[in-house]
Image (cartoon, rainbow, N blue to C red; front, top):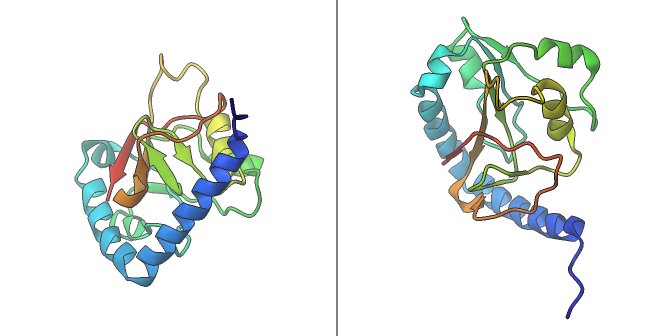
Length: 171
């Protein structure tokens, strides 16, 4: 029997493949087209309409950019982390109280709601600090992932500390 590859190796390989796919989508202009589709899907969702306080991400060049939401809906409070390391600052965590909607990026998502990030752990650490431990009893916020269809997989490697998203919009 062959030894099982370490989980870290699996994630590293998946990250490299995902980044190559995203780079191709970016270069072809496809990510820009899908941005419009993603924004349209989000603004037509009941959970977005009712949300007052929303955490979104500042998109990297190879992520679907949702920044237009902040301009289209000035009446909603948008919280956007400035990712400058692997740990969210305490003052930012305090701003994330009473969120209605959390939209997080990923290199890939799977059908169970698990996400593959870029490897620094920023969003995993942030979610672990702002999501109540007894979330199943008191679910007040929705966690949404947005991903190009090419990176929506059947299964991703996951670990016990991973927090699943509730919903993935596949674009």
